Length: 62
Image (tube, rainbow, N blue to C red; front, side, top):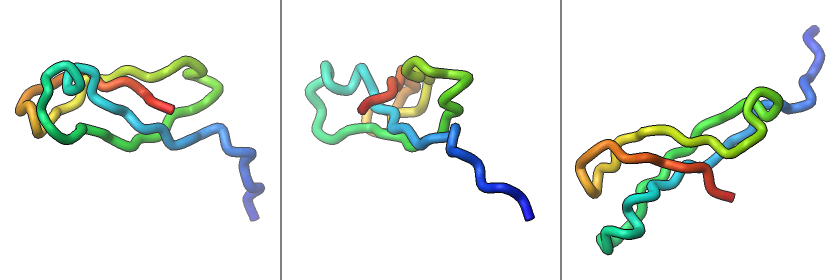
C-alpha cells in the first residue's frame, strides 16, 4: 500500500481583483489547488469573470 502524503497540495480560493472596483453586485471566485513547496507565495491567474463578461486577474485570498 502507498504511504499517505504529508499534504503539500492545499486548496486555495482565487478572487477577482477588478470586480471590487466596478461596483457590480456579487463576487467571482474560483477554487483550485497548489503545491505549497513549489509556490509558497500567493497565486495570481487570469480567469473568466462571468459577471463582468471578460477575463480578469484573480488573486489568492486567505
